[in-house]
Image (cartoon, protein in one colour):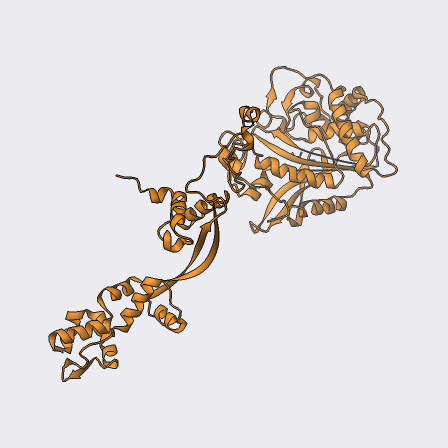
Length: 529
Ligand code: PHE
């Protein structure tokens, strides 16, 4: 089967035709080639100045199948007249069987009106010996020219469903200054040889196609969790929060539980709830960690530049007394201290030094608050990172997820102030009218669960946990008695699932995640529904 070259090389066809024709009209010269293909060919030639073209919007009047059959066989009235002429006399009852029901119905009346036929009793007889089938002639004209200038007639034909009008783009094409019979051979690479020989000076370089989309690149992309995380970071940074270094997942029971006044018998410290590390079997006692300390110094210094108040000096803290802190924590659990009766149980150092995958980022907040006690001053800290819980995995729970956590330390803080702060904070993600429900955490008193009305879901949802840290947690650190500290936490997964319409958390995190889906997800704006 010979290749139908005109379909495959429109570019060459245009050049060929222009040799003999001054102006091409694409709707006439290439009636069956798709619009986009013509345009691509013309652009290819125009970018090389081989042709010039202009586009015109125009309307085409096209015949419907019924109109086409009128052009072929005549109008309904013509068919009726022809039947009468052929037979001399046609009984009205028999007309439909000769010309068809449609023509008999529509054509009879018109043939009477045109005085082509008349009634003779129950039959039809001829009046005019020859007739002009004006409808057919009109439609035939339209078929040839695809136009009709008389608007009134056009509307009538449209109403009778004989024609339709469609928009077409027509290009008129003429030769350009560099017209040639063929596209000349084009150079696509500038080579060392061409530079050496001087051939580059006369070479015919292929023009750069700025409209080309380019090959799709297999680039990396941010996970939706990271996108939402960045939005939250921006909210925190804009309010003077300093980010905490959360870069180790393993911590001791001391930082994760004991320092938070979580008793050693608390169910959260059960293997059912917490992942324990067996190797190494034991953590060191809390001690200085110069690397994390230096990271924190840098983060605070950066923030101080932006948010320093006159009384906030950058003075270097005294060195931390971990030994004393350890003893204070033991005392407050075992025998009571700092005005608290404590839990009064034999506190075990071994339990305290067990290693765990941290169950909350509050372990890091605790580390940072102890650091703050060296130089107590108003401060705001946040973190967004991974935590681990020994949970049964289902559509809304994973054994690991991300926590967003904020801590605010200041003098004279009140519970009302925390509520107000949280209202501001969550309004930035489009959640208004918060509700607070009393709750229990070993390390905060009072504690509040936070509920928000989600406009998209049209219901109340639990969005976080919060409270004022207990004196039993803060005073062993050495923080002043009149300093209050707010804390609040929420998961990063929840708002991300809401924003991206994910119902199963396993589609967001873990081995079942569809990487194509990850790539296709757009950026997110917290404040937009
Ligand atoms: N640690 C809490 C949680 O895991 C969140 C929280 C942080 C609550 C700080 C109060 C204060 O849910």
